[in-house]
Length: 411
Image 1 (cartoon, rainbow, N blue to C red):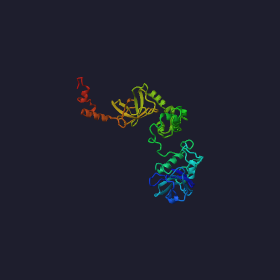
Image 2: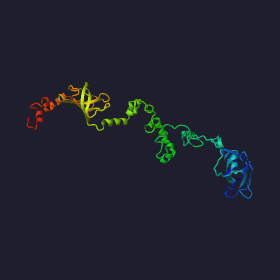
Image 3: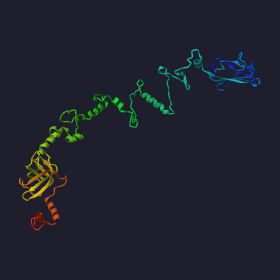
Image 4: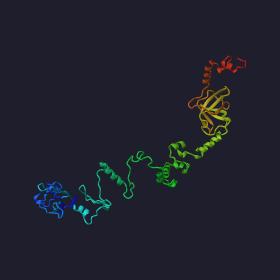
């Protein structure tokens, strides 16, 4: 198919014309005036060309030169020449393609570029819209859809706006909630090598993670636990009052904490002095102060000189005159004053100051909340065991008396 330049006069060759009878003998006397000669333009336009110049080609029988004027080639698109006279020759037609002048020149002009190895194309319009150029003569492109998705184009534009033009790095902004989570990060996306390279050297001073952890420790004053000294013995600056740690350390007020007496080492030292090498029991005499309160005087062992030294321990009181023992649980002890003990219930006998005795058993403890067993309760229990109401169970003929003298021949 021959390409024609728009609105330009041109001579085209049409043929071959052959005899209608045998279909091969060239016809050399064809004239457009006596035949049906038409020009079919693009968009169904027909033009009578019977008056156009039409001359036979020398030495090429059956071929003719047809002159098309500018009006014949004014429409871009397919152009067909038809010449037919069924009484003289077989029908002849020829197709042409009419293109715009600039396109024709880029293809056939003396200075035509021809083949472009870079596959460049100069486009003046896209879908009837003029193409505008931006920086460096690059076309501005507006995309409405990507893969038939109208939102994809907007999302792509937003994404590219976030990236810096020069570096391709993420510009200032924020991620959508949930954009970075376990599901969004694929397995092995950040391996050890990548992580090590990103956080810096393993040297503390240049390690990002280490410095971040240190910042948290400093913010919470945890650096003072092991390395940084406190401002003073009063640690309120480092340990805020009424925090859990301050309540454990100093009942909520760290200003009341005295390291020389309240620290673990001083407490251990006092314990060593009070307990190291001490006998398993402390005994001595006691004096009645009030109901369940007695002053103790040690005669065997040493009573502790600090408060609450015998919490919930067992103390046994002995009535020398009545030969009666009573055990009690210690509920309080004052070791800094009169070595005074408070027990869970009053004695069942009237103590004689400086005569009756006591024994504190260091290894014996009474359950908290359970009172000691009184003498009357012990007698009642014994009566039930022996099934006889005998005082002290030593009366002549009683089971207790016989048990005591068993094997001696006395009943």
